[in-house]
Length: 271
Length: 292
Image 1 (cartoon, each protein chain N blue to C red):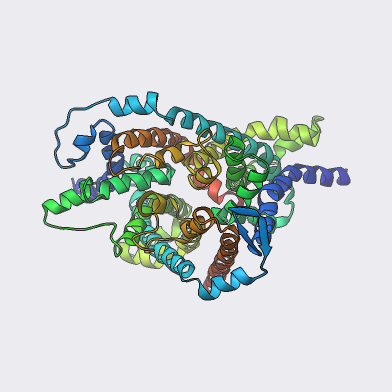
Image 2: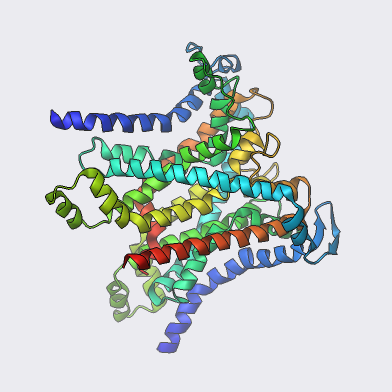
């Protein structure tokens, strides 16, 4: 009983915090089932739910194409990041190539404001005639996702005991074989977490996608930004599109949360 | 054997270094070259060498740039300090072993940080809109008339939206920091009859300081990049009251097509951020030395 009296205020506080976190989502979800007229009366609780917004977004808009573009962009960015980042992370972790300084230089690259890179990237991609292709956005996303994925993997590799590869090499594996037959499978959760987190970042980016894509390669955030055209006119449809963008990432986050702290702190803890 | 080892470790690194050179090194160098030219998107073949002129005008005459920088600093200052205070408080609540439904709250409260900022910006534009929004409507029912996006309030509102989205990140890092603290000092404090407040002030806070500093630095650098909320809601207005640095560079470069000037701005921005980081790290190191 005393326990309950002490815990109840804290429970209420946390529930209130959860309410603040959840309310915008809930309200947006609700709006996606309202007509524009009902959206214009925010205080009246009664409305006749309609599927017209969802029908418009799923069948008559560019949202499905944009979802496809976002998936493709994210998948390509993450695959390239893992392919290039994993061997490098192994070199940093096992052989300490370049020392702590190079490690942190990689992290600093991740912190560069996109505003500093967008002008040259735009011009280079323009002269390569790659603007409005998936590759343009992939190149831009690599600038921050590749350093991040590498940083994540260093952390996971630091935690892996060295006996594993040494044993493999005693058994006659070459160093390269030991790396991709023994080490990579052993850090599979790390690869998955780094990849999934990289994917979330790519899926969520607006800045690069807005400036480097056109009609055919626009990603979902660009599409969402385009809905607010006239005041309130496409509110319902925009809400549906927001739900499409938000829900998959919230679900994915439940899988990465556990690894996130280890990943962010990863390469630094050892030093 | 030794030679093959060193060849092996560099071979592992080559793909990364090449990619970084290609997507970061070359663009940055090119951008510096662009910043020394009067380079317009509308007349790319007629770029004219102007040397450091654009840097000089930027530093001495460009009021918009400095206004954007000031807005960004105000935004970062308000957002990050609120995030730290709220994040620390929530982390402490979620760290207590007796808190009910602790694991559920831990995952659920992190939700905002995984969502695309443009969606967050638009959701809040909708919630706070003076005609359609539920928040002003409810406030009006209580007799409070408030325009969230007026020239006076807009920057603060954007900072509060940032607090909504990124306090969870603080909670995440601070919780990890709390969890890694040793238990003995806390048990000793309990035995000595220290009050919760004393324990927090004299034990938790000093021991948590490295985590706090790291979390603040990461959040600050990230908040410096704020763009989506501005794009979604105010587009820099009313006037230039919410124009942030990232938005300003975007506007000059891609709405006014003055790429040379935008590049010069981005180099000044890099310099400012570097100075900030160096100062913060020195402060951090002096503090950790003083503690020894």
